[in-house]
Image (tube, rainbow, N blue to C red; front, side, top):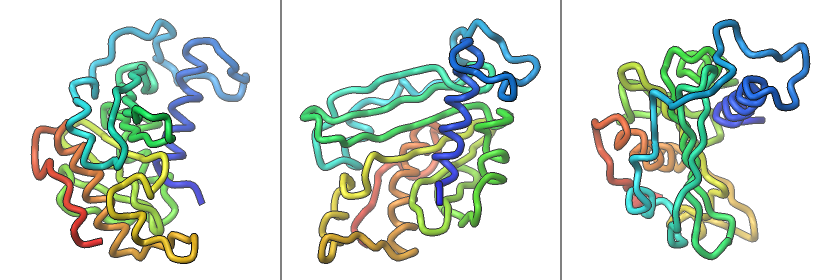
Length: 198
């Protein structure tokens, strides 16, 4: 089962490819009104610093890769990666909530079984059995995902016989911790991840 963020990321990538005229089939053209010449995004995540992300990765955060996303190129994706190439990454997508593909309502509609995440933005959800949140505050949508769950401090201790089987309560703790990144972008709520309950 794909998480809502995975579906949103795929849809955003496809829409962006279509807008740029790259590998776009006739059945997946950009929505009407989409600007083929992607300009400066109206919504950004590049104001985040490595220190804002460090509490969610066991490896040292080295920097980030920033790209334009959104149906009409008015959002950003910021991928913070580690310094030692161990595959750790935190992926943040921020777009206007009105975005028909990546906006909050669209993301929640594509979720199979959404669960509310408290304390993040005005409203937030995660997929049942997953911990990666999508949140909304005002007119902004923020989604956060990770390369691997065990990159988050404390999660490696939950691996039993080589298997990580998180409970829904643990998924809630992780979703709320990842959601602090969205709160930082929104300028509201708790911005310090708390993983002590794992």
